[in-house]
Length: 337
Length: 253
Image (tube, rainbow over all chains, first blue to last red; front, top):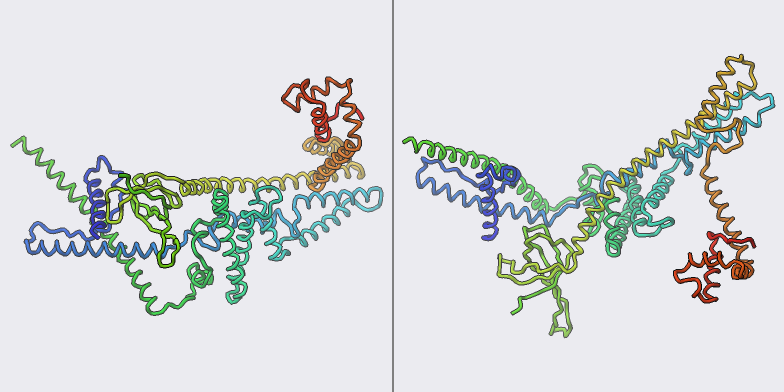
């Protein structure tokens, strides 16, 4: 405890020093984090008696100890109960997967059955042209042929609209796109990068189902397996090719802790990340609930310390400035008297 | 006396100022089970420059105690794997943001390509209509001249020489792959031909009439001078040369 107190004091002293010399380190002082220990500061009035001053000083000392204890306890608790940097199943909200999802539903350039819109237009034009050529020299009108071809085209576009694809078709397309983006060279379908990318696509599509069907436990279990397998593949990649590993996780929107730390897509996950709304999924025992409450109140208390410390540091700063001005005035008066 | 020295792995960094946790591993003989067992101990180590990263392998050296649990300092970083990983992470983030920008451009490009193709097709349709009106219906000379001007404008735009034309006006992807395929087929036929006539080709290549061409070919294949090459080496080199379809044979066979 003694060491930590010393450390805390030393940092606050630095802060005070910085605020006392505004010309030199004004920028630093503004950015300097105010330590919550300043919350215990008691300003003793100059007309207070010695007994009163002593009790106030004792109070300050007691408070200081309490603040240090609280701050350290909270720190310890938060280190133990560290949250993941990103969603361990879905990863970042934007990036690779959002792009793929948009691409899969892009009805302007894509048609059902994997047909390309550009090629489609060309082919339809070719068909129209050949029909026109055939009709030349006969009694059939040019406009009639064109109208018939236009109707055919519209019918084809209706049939081949992306609305008519199934979810599995979309998933297949997404997997294809992922494979093409992550492959090491042409024809690479099995490298860990590709495997993890495909797994990510599968997980994203499956999570939609999980969201809509909370009672499909078998399916959820399959997704859970997928998440674990992706973690395993990425761990392997980190071992054999770290550079590629970091690139892959950055692309997939994951972070290192999601891969290396223990994770199970259990009910706790569904509750924390609000997969099924604000539903309470795990009922805590009285003891567990008491612990949670304790730390949430502790967090609030520490928050209060921080706010109070900021106010106190402002007051200290003003007092010091006043003192300095007084001193300067005195120095200015002396030569005249 | 030499100072106490350990080699260990950095397991925790960034949680305490100028301090890292280093795990030192060693084998200790357990007298109860009569077997060597692995023993690990974690040290808090002073890291003045804050250079270490999690995953580095470091050598630590004892120093006068600086705090309750700190009596060691980092002496050297033996394997800077952690630092390497941190660097990779940073580089990966930059690369991903670049790639995303490229992908965005690509989608825009694809869209504009599609637009260009549809525009082209629409123009070709117009060309058909104009030609049809020009040929069949009874229009005045003035209108005919106007139509001709329109037709010529479109022709010029897409560099079409005649209408109706026999050239391919639109390239299909399926045809592109066919062309590639045909090129491959030609190469295979050529190779088969060369293989069949290999002896004859080599005989002719090694004959005295073609000394100069042979020497020029050989000089491109080897660094050593062509006079010093042995007969079998020359033959081997020439065989290799002939069996590569990319190379041309300087005579007919």
